[in-house]
Length: 120
Length: 241
View 1 (tube, chains in turn purple, blue):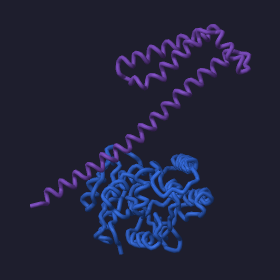
View 2 (cartoon, rainbow over the protein chains, first blue to last red):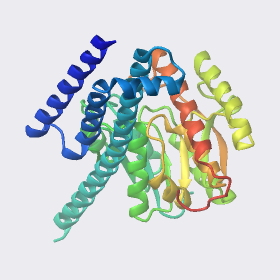
View 3 (cartoon, rainbow over the protein chains, first blue to last red):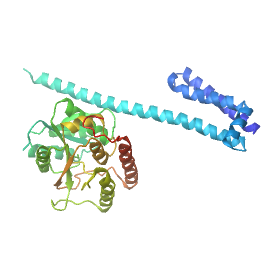
View 4 (cartoon, chains in turn green, blue):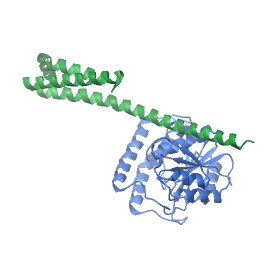
């Protein structure tokens, strides 16, 4: 169990460093880093607080705290992925609308250009 | 006889082998009908072929898929004040001589959409077994939702009026739109009618729906239909979503 918690702490720190590095290099935007930063900090805190983890596993009715830990990790990452699915869906909708608007505006410009050329 | 302001739209993606013939055939049959080819970022000479044949072009900057293209055409038609829009495929399967019958039914019945359906009575090419099974399956699925069983819910030969244009400009399925469109219409208590039409073989190219994609097609469309039912709050809607 101790080794699992240490591994989780290392992974959380690694995630935190990667996200901060990506932020510094502007690979991800600040508003999109919040979920990852919150997830890594939460997992780091959990890995360093065995009492909290055991209380949580007892609340879930699990005898093994490591199962509760894995369940928490799963829920945290599912939550983050769901949030990004919503963001990506919204961006796709905006992209499609924007693309259609650009195409229609280009078409209007083309028509105006043709009409201007046809005039004597 | 075509009355009112009518636009013909032809969504096309890599249809260089057929698009010119399709456009010319429409121009010969209905010379006064404006034709708009919506090019979905083709990598071949579709745009040049369509333009040389006499069509106007709406070129989307990147590949949107069939539904995105058709919706762009509907949005343009709505903005330009067209009263009705006819959509045909760019592969030559639809006979432009059937267009006046679709428009006549649209005006006569006052419904929002008319679908040109393949039928034995009208002659012409009948579809292959797998597609027939698919059509039958979706007819069964749609019957309790629509309260009637459409003959060919997969047909891309449709005419819509301005009320439908307004709705489709805001809410339109992006991939494989034909079946989901019927559910979108039903949510607003809009009506559709069917007109038996001749369906021909593709002039060139292949269908984008391969054996593997047909499985994805079924799942995607079923999910789309389900989502549209979930969105329905039980109240009849006459306006946009």
